[in-house]
Image 1 (tube, rainbow, N blue to C red):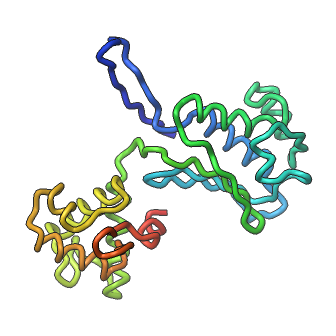
Image 2 (spheres, rainbow, N blue to C red):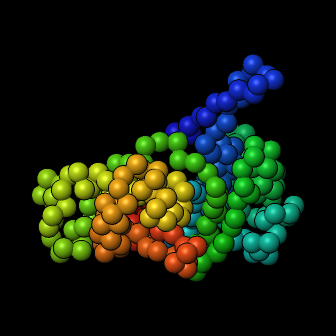
Image 3 (cartoon, one colour):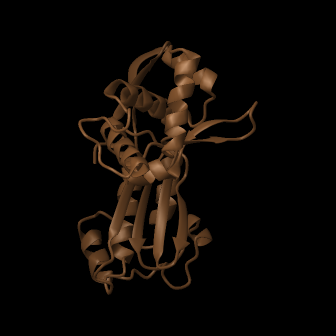
Length: 240
């Protein structure tokens, strides 16, 4: 996994300060936990790692060990690994330490490095840990372009031929990608704010926003005065 590094200098200190895009050690702990506690009796199960513009999610098929709740994961707790042989191999490799403290270590590491603490949830027969507020350390534009193509194709019930479909020209698509990238970085913006930041006429942005709204790539949330446009879950699903 490419973590990405951002570097900065303080006016009072010439030493470079590097910060990873992800909480590296905590992420590794989460992946190891997913492998150790996965329910391998289901051959169709898997460990899924999903990277979004503002979060990282790791999901494993299986339930929490007996006697463990989501709340107790933030405290020292006894834990019996679902797959003790795998856990023992990781222990011999010095990838894990005492069973039952890994989730506590993950929380501590995130706090030390300035990241938001991970959040666990259980749904059906799966356990998901989410690292919120991360920054994507790679170019997300290619995936967004593919997702946008898919939404356009769905809307017009047909494929896209060399970037055009029912009047969707290359230049129009480029403008829509700029808007989506801006919304992903800022989460919510009004049309006037988008026009100002992209240095484009308000009427042009309004037309492009209408198309994006029609194909379900963006939606408007909130009141007319205080609300703004946001990227839809439908587009993020296409990126998946």
